View 1 (tube, helix red, strand yellow):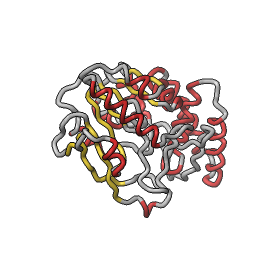
View 2 (tube, helix red, strand yellow):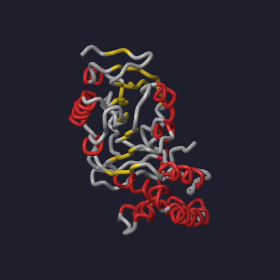
View 3 (cartoon, helix red, strand yellow):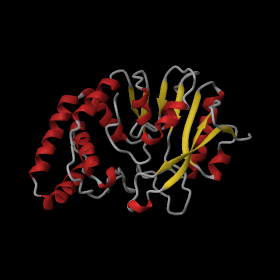
View 4 (cartoon, one colour):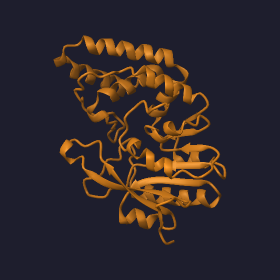
Length: 285
């Protein structure tokens, strides 16, 4: 089975059993307009799917995996050789050199995508983060024995991508093309549940409460025209209220990305669906 080729903040690998159990009994095409690491897409293994994200470098990387795999593996192999040749004390400097190169925007998609993957395998906790100017700013993570290539994962992903539509764009522009009986899964940056829970910088623009409200309204529109809708979000009273009329499951999770490992504690999230799911409770409209 193909697996995600990158680690992504908010990735859904640990929730896959719950998400797979919440899929509709029958559906036509799968749409994931907040692709990120696309864990559910890979678990479903349906090549006739649509993946999109507003993060242009992410979607470009997926396209390069699909269309230029041998060259991508060759470039990552070069990066691996260069990295392994460095004394351990010099590897952080190499990371920051590559990070600066990435932020200067190489002219070709292949180099940019190889840097995207290599930096993700070397960054602190594998975290992809950009600042308000859109510059990648995650620090070096000092991994012990990083595999920058991960050829088997890339090959499996490339095979699955061959019949997959890969687009860069916002959910409303791309997802509105879904047809009745198609299934849309939205995994947006989560609404904050505390003053310190503010990580939404997968892209320079962030994702604030007004975006949450707009997304919920858009999902209602899709459900009204017969599209099957599922979404994930933080378990908060505001989200419960925002999605009144949806079926809601509260599920336990463990936060995987935190600067302090002692704070990677249990929490809860919600799975929201426009259709009934075993164990879910419908919020009163």
